[in-house]
Amino acid sequence: MAHSKFTVGEINAVIGDNSEHQVHRAGYNGVWELRHLNSTRNLFVPAYAGLNLEHVFNGETEFTNRDIFFEPRRAPMTFKKISDQQAELYQPVTPNFHVESTTRFTLRAPWYLDLEFRCKPHQHVHERGWFGCFWASYINGPADKSLYFPGSWSKGESLWMQLCTQAHNDESTVLAHGDDFELTWEEGTHDALFKNFSRMRYAKPLYYGNVDGLVYIMMFKPGNGIRMTHSPSGGGTNQAAKTTNPAWDWQFIVPKYEVMKEYHYQARIVLRPRCSRTEILAEYEKWARQ
Image (cartoon, rainbow, N blue to C red; front, side, top):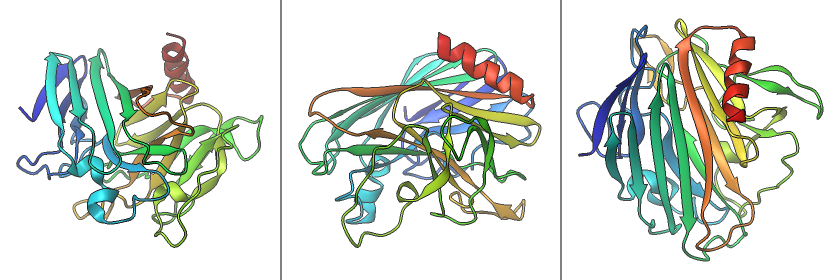
């Protein structure tokens, strides 16, 4: 089995590996479909996916060719349905970056989808001493392409910030206040979302976006090397809506790695009817304290 459908509380999800099935294209893993009971359509672009493990990068070898640039999408991956509300994706050690990973998805009533990611580097191939993993969520033609998050331009402030980049690879990545780890790159390599940085910083590891009458909230447990990323057109063109499909993405940076050591983080997705920012922060604070 390469995928399965889940219904818990007010949300439906199809979770699967990186294989092809009907309109879903090969190479896109994670959540193939996500809907609230009030949804009129799939939140994610039907041909692609959300929470899609897309890249491993280390400043050296990711730009060699497209198979390496998109290694997690191309390398073998297996899907396992654990229960009526839980599934797991497992990727054995990949051929170039030599990273083994497991992603566990758990649906919880009324509108939560929890993600736990674990990875283990198996070889000394990250010559600069760090590596990162990158996820893409291709959003299905929303009228508002923006991400909103608490943060500021100056450390110590926390305002509601709006990020809607003007073009792909344009000031695309937002770091946390206090994230001073500088990534370096082999000279002459091409551009990428994870190489371009916004002047804004986030104060809490969460962002949200508006889709139809719903709010989509992406939040992370504190202190996990998370960077937020945006593209206005990462999911291509939406002909029906006469607009583009933005990508609401994130990264997980491991600044000093050790071979055979496990690294992990936890995230939660909330898909619920539109609510106030006070309620969005309450969702985060309640979960972060658990």
